[in-house]
Image (cartoon, rainbow, N blue to C red; front, side, top):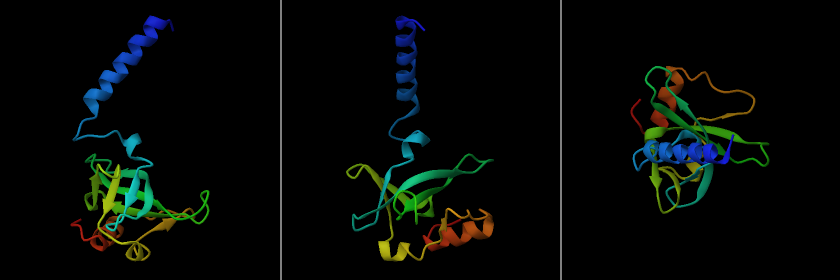
Length: 132
């Protein structure tokens, strides 16, 4: 690819990002890795990935990675998307829960993910006080 062609491709990518990402939208790959804070301001983890409804296209959960070291002992906590608020001052999401309550929240580890069925969804959403 020649330099003018590379420049044109780069410019189109910048324009696409400008149009796709606004104060109302964010690209999913930019959510992955974003810090999650408890209400007291303590960083409690980061977004590992999102779970999106296949049919409705709605983000159902942000799966937060919690604890562990170099991937060992790590647990994954699905948090209803509606239970998270983005805090521009922290450049991260705040969940209305403290760290001690998070220890009892529904989670899974690297040995196996949940079934993601309706019963699991109701359990997770009710734990965080969000309507399912």
